[in-house]
Length: 205
Image (cartoon, rainbow, N blue to C red; front, top):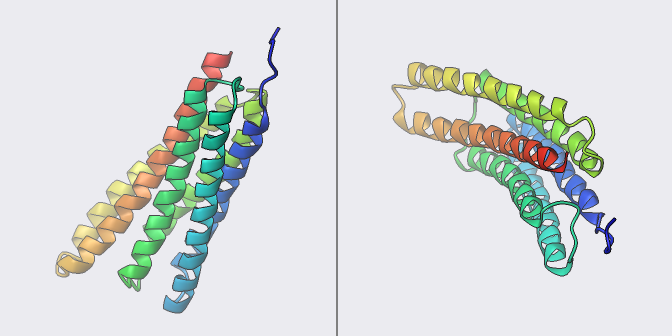
């Protein structure tokens, strides 16, 4: 029996933070198909969502400093919030690079990369509320790990394609390679979140 009630607001805060990832990944997908003016507008919207995600992360950190009893280890709550925020930061960085580098056409596999990120974001947003009961989370981390493996394969194929198609334009090659790398980092970050959820669930079981 607990002598002090646990602060369960964290579950709502983590769920809210994950919803920002869903919005961010959708904006990134829209941005790929937009013209230059549209991309700039969507990148601005992405920055706003990134700021909201930062605010949500800071809310969690402030609450940790004010709460004596947490629903699970405070280090795990802090790490999970930071990892979720990293996903948003990397998607925002990718959007910013596409606009700053004025890349007109992106290889089709870039869109496939973003589709993987969208699915990871949706799964993550669905999983966060289930931390409250630690119920039915295994399917989530297994699927995100599968998606990250898919993202790795896409990344390798994209790199090979870039060096084949743009070897004669090293500046464009460098720009595209950086965008592709940032998108791969975002997939890695989603996997990190899933792995952290698995660790938390195992601790609490």
